[in-house]
Length: 127
Image (cartoon, one colour):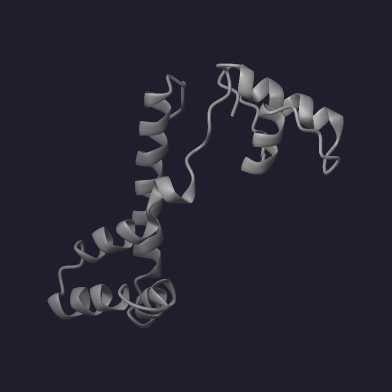
């Protein structure tokens, strides 16, 4: 993301690596190569948070602890462990009519992450 203009540009790590080393391997246009060189050379461009920065599994875990019903909380906590954790978690949510509560909670956490990221990168934002 360009901090000055707000422009968002999607680039693969491999393409940025190629641009960093001046390697035009013909897999993308010269304009893309120039854009990626600009991104690497300018302090105006910063990387947006990735899925690894967001930690949705931890958000699910924290949501579980907002549930007052001990048995339901335990069922949700059990669902997020092991194979198919996301699928199992959503299944328990559906069975217990908690989907709206989950999505509201998750959206608030995403807003907090975005707000913190903007503050850390000195980007103005609307509340």
